[in-house]
Image (cartoon, rainbow, N blue to C red; front, side, top):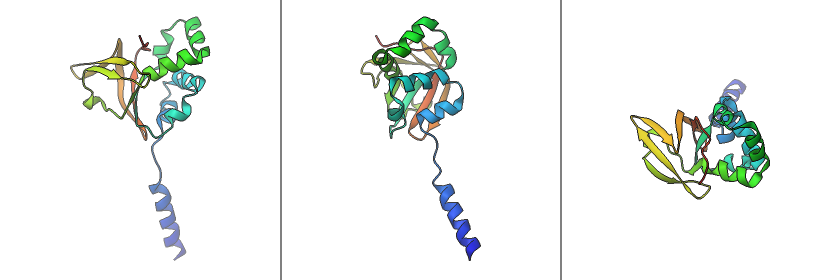
Length: 151
């Protein structure tokens, strides 16, 4: 009897396992270290760990490396500007790559970014999606090759 109950407890525990949230998914991906640092500096960690759902066009570490170091350091120290830039990369809802439609899309920041589709490839402003559909329990991440800036 004890063995059966232990098996049921293990099954129940396994059944409650969930995917990671946006922040934890970005951390475990290994290519968003600068983004995670920026999210923490802007105080957006709790928001992106929240219920969402969110679609995040996430600049990779290589994308952030395109920004001159002095400008990136200044941005990381300016919480208001950093928040504006980061929330420009976030769209409410969970939009998988196959469901992306070309056109203007309103961001959490408040302005719109331009999404393009060309032969199955997705672009966001001047950036290209380099890895799509990294699923989190509160949304999806699409890795992009450049940091996009709000107007």
